[in-house]
Length: 84
Image (cartoon, rainbow, N blue to C red; front, top):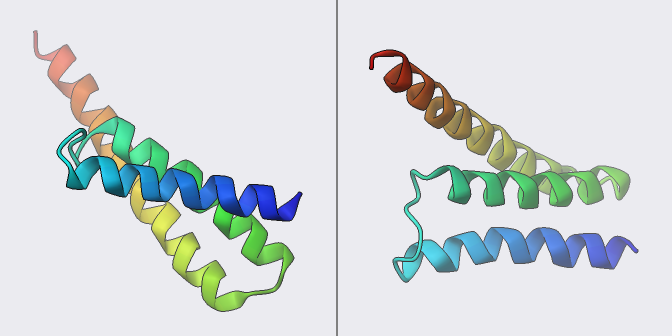
């Protein structure tokens, strides 16, 4: 089961990266940040259970950065909708 979670997390992060590199998605989009957040959270959870602290740090920071970016996107949209 842990292997499936690892593979799913890695697939999500890599899918977002690949999609951005070939121009399918903007790195400043909610889709990109959501995929990164989901993947990094899965990888963080596996790293925590395995006591792999380097990977906890790497993926935990990745998740926090993605969450902050996603929050900025969401709040920016709300702000712009309120200006109409």
